[in-house]
Amino acid sequence: MKESEDGTEKLIDRLVEEINTEDMTIQDLEQQIRRHKIRFWQRVGAGVAVTLALAIGIYLLIALQTYSKARVLKTYSDGEIANSSYAYFNGGILKYSRDGAAYLNQQGEEKWNQSYQISNPVVEQNKKAAVIADKGGNDIWVVEKDGVKGEIHTTMPIEKVAVSQQGIVGAILRDDMAAKILCYDMEGNVLVEMKTSPANTGYPMDLSISENGETVQVLYLTTQEGKIASEIVYYNFGKNGNEKKEYVVSREHYENVVMAEGAFLDRTNSVGIHDKGFVIYRGESQPKEVEKVSIKKKIKSAFFNDRYIGLILQNEKKGGCELRLYNTAGKKVLSKNFKGEYSQVQIHDSQVILYEGKKCCIFSKSGVKKFEGELSSSIQEMFPISGVNKYIVINTDGIQEVRLVK
Image (cartoon, rainbow, N blue to C red; front, side, top):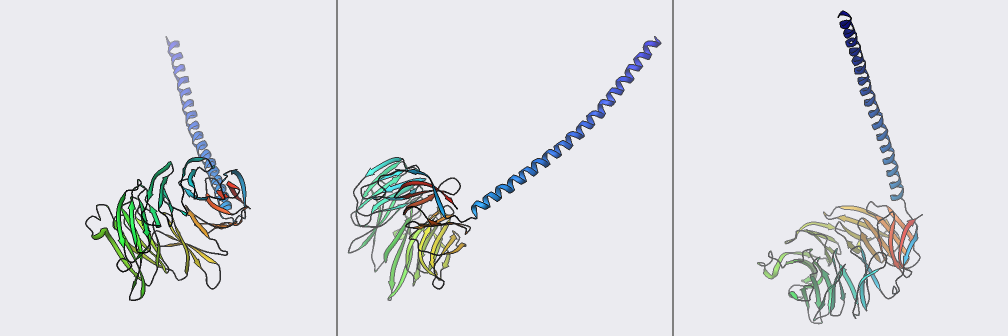
């Protein structure tokens, strides 16, 4: 009995010792795991930092360079380049001529086409809808990405057109005696008709329509006591304008300026450009003036998108021109001088593309000159696509996908 008790005690002592030894091993293992985790995350952090620094370096290397050549990656044939005009529209290409229009994807594949006969086709568009109008004629075609939505026939010659995202069309019509402002739905039904006269309203110079199609901006040129003046008038044909006289919800007078170009930039912001600067309005149903910007240089041309108001200004003393961008609050965000004359200027996202014949110059919003050089053929249209320094160029060689290179 005693021997059995001694054996039991020895067994218990051995088990206790093993347990104590095992506890020490677990503690050591936990410490090793913690140290391993620390070293692992240190290595991960260092790797991420190196990768991020490398990515930033590559981005800056690409973004801050000025390229001088465009390498053709692909060419998509289109047999009627010489007789057609092109415009970037809703991710693809709107092709139009005197004989008809078609919508192409970026590979030049035709998605729809429409035949017509007009003498002087002009295009106005927004993100969703576009109009092809016969300037000086009487026909307007309303189109979207998926096809033709309507045809409008006017009773007077067309001078200016605009379109909302819903396809509501505004037009300035004129003959030798008078000018009218009309709004149509896509089926050609007259929604609103307003007469103008030089003595009362002034002469309408331009018009633009809000995204929802309810508010119309019209710029008028007037004279008072032999002096030139301009007015910006906003008409609202929704519920907010029903109780207003002649639907006028806002009217401002500007002396000694010629207000010749206007636009709705987005849902709430609009702008009127005159020969001495521009005016920004804010409001969807009843726009109000919020900012005036004076420009001392001669304004050669203006362009817009939903984020920026762009101007090309003439440098009188040092020669060349200045590219200037303002945001929708009227704050100057870019001023860049450049040499050369470019008849075409466009803004796509945050890039400004200027071209004339084969010559091309591209600036980023940050002021970096991304490209300056000549392409192989005269440019008819050019816009950026996804990918590093990649663009679609339409010229006499066809529709080309190009990349900017040194």
